[in-house]
Image (cartoon, rainbow, N blue to C red; front, side):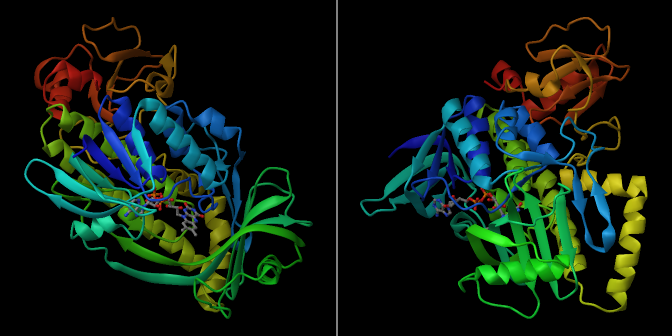
Length: 485
Ligand SMILES: Cc1cc2nc3c(=O)[nH]c(=O)nc-3n(C[C@H](O)[C@H](O)[C@H](O)COP(=O)(O)OP(=O)(O)OC[C@H]3O[C@@H](n4cnc5c(N)ncnc54)[C@H](O)[C@@H]3O)c2cc1C
């Protein structure tokens, strides 16, 4: 029976990010993916600022930026514009690139770090006991099944997760919008202002994101009076017609490459952990594509879970794995609420509510503070994890923007493990942790492997207030837990 420390079921962006991080931390990990190749369909197209920071911590952001364009404006209904150019991030905008580019980059990362990736292996069953999990995988093209043995199994197997079902985890929610059409289109008379364009009349909506200056766009369209099942073919004339009615002019659809009709559900797994089985990405939450959150939330689930599993496998307290649900479930719930609110605003039928919305949206987004908060929320850069009452207010916030002498944090974090950032001028400390020095006046901080602050204070502090106490609380003891290897 082949054995490994972690079996990841599903080789989409979530599974590959997780496998790459686990392998980078020195853990044995095997990805079982049913399809022989990367999914060729475009699907998600927006990589948000926080995900770009995460990818930068793995050396993947720059090559990906070469495969798309950063856009910093989202033109919404009623003439309102969301300005992303002031995001508190190195990445001031959203990267528009087909999902296949992200999927390929993350698969390359997982393999380069030493993860085993088995394609053509479909997981059909699993059984867990006190020591581990047995996973049955069948070759997709027929043949004898293989039973894998692992200490943990992560279901990163998408919205229809078999792992979720086998673990007995409920997925409550409902279908919220049907007959949404996604397509990659070449337009003769597309928007020329750059940025993302969203327009809706209450009867139809149309959305366009430019793939550079090529004349190609990702379009998303919906027509209240043209509702068809997911498997009904997409007629190119339908895309042109709905875009024209939503934008108020003919955009000249010259060519359509990829197209898909789908319906949106809003669902979230009741819990992200059942014993030795965990869920991440679409297996844990699905919602409308409004706001481009799906892929981004999945990748961030993965980087939250990976270091915790890696530490649990090296002897850290098991309770570290429970913090995954505690931290990521509320994030998933917020994403459902935010993308749902946006979808409902866009599809709001004509009437007094819509008129009020069209009146208020530009005014509200004209207030810089409101616009910046909304932009930062979608970009994922204001996310903070809960802290205990006696902890420093910075605990749980992201550390990425702290100015350092020398390399930026995301470059230092290309090595796994915690990072200790000393106050400006403070001497190096006696520890094997990766260390850095602040270039500004703030406190010392201990940064978790996923980039969030675990502790803040004086680097000289010892005892209960010191960084070593926090580090030990997260990692247990042992040198391997400190370095991640
Ligand atoms: C039509 C469509 C359009 C979308 N548009 C957008 C968008 O515009 N913006 C956005 O942010 N998101 C969008 N999404 C969602 C986005 O694609 C997902 O959020 C993202 O892919 C989630 O990644 P994941 O790795 O969690 O799951 P997935 O990408 O679904 O990957 C799951 C993987 O698990 C594999 N798998 C499943 N079952 C098994 C099994 N039993 N054994 C082995 N392998 C298995 C699958 O083959 C797949 O490769 C869209 C999704 C779809 C379907």
